Length: 201
Image (tube, rainbow, N blue to C red; front, side):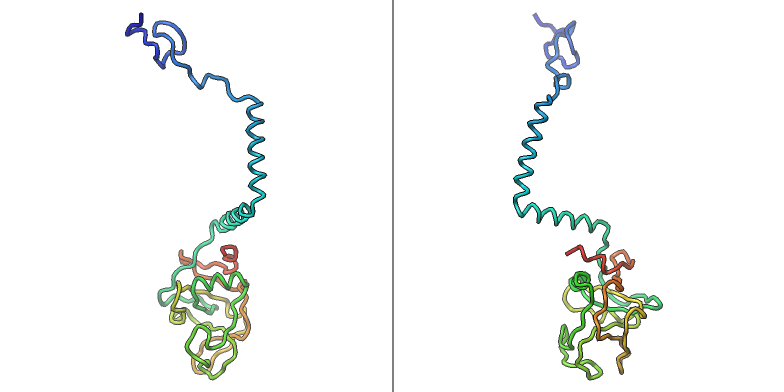
């Protein structure tokens, strides 16, 4: 007859004796056999092979790989007003979406006056395709697109053939600007190569 000194389910007792037998301890039971492991791996290989036949598997894998490449990439910062200029650089305002396009295409394209504006000619009377830069970052924010997140880019002034627009003093080029020479202002206040954003699309 069981007593208070001999409970049949005392978990502290691993054997017989005064306190009776403990229930079976799963930690002391035998582990999986080699046959169990082989069966598990065989099923895993079958599932993996089946998944590899599905196109979505590769789409998901590519997306995960792209996200891995972006680890450490700093997002563009929001351009809200006048910024401090660095000697030897010229500046261009755009929005975050177009910044990623610049990185993807490898260059800042030129455009007609009517592109992204309500004008038909440039201030100096020309209608040729151009891209514009400012000699300082003081007023660049005024040229950011109205839509999207405004961002700031820069390029060494001697890295591209710029011309000075008569009457405004703004700098422009009739040739695309390579993204490899451009930097963007990150949300941490530091400058980063635009070409580093290419894998984010």
